[in-house]
Length: 119
Image 1 (cartoon, rainbow, N blue to C red):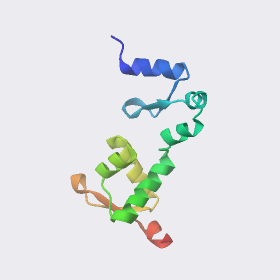
Image 2 (cartoon, helix red, strand yellow; image 1 turned 90 degrees about the vertical axis):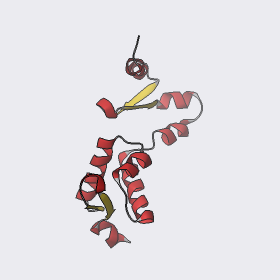
Image 3 (spheres, rainbow, N blue to C red; image 1 turned 90 degrees about the horizontal axis):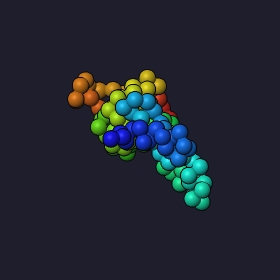
Image 4 (cartoon, rainbow, N blue to C red; image 1 turned 180 degrees about the vertical axis):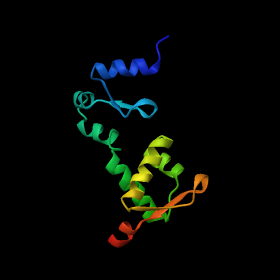
């Protein structure tokens, strides 16, 4: 029996799919060429639109609207794995966009000093 991962990698090699990320966090999307051949080039941009900068902006927007965010919210909002969500939150804290509160399961994030200065 051939695993789904093997089939997906064959689709990548054939130019039908594109791989994003590595190991367990790896995701797949249809390639830009497929969307062009279907006459829907903007469909590719909509599908592959969750790039790191966009993810960061979505998190910051969520915090502006709701006051705080938790890792589980980031996982759902950005369609990320737990480790990817943690890295995104850490980067936003390091950049000053978010401030971390608590440890472990009780951790949540609010607007950082850089975010408050811009509003």
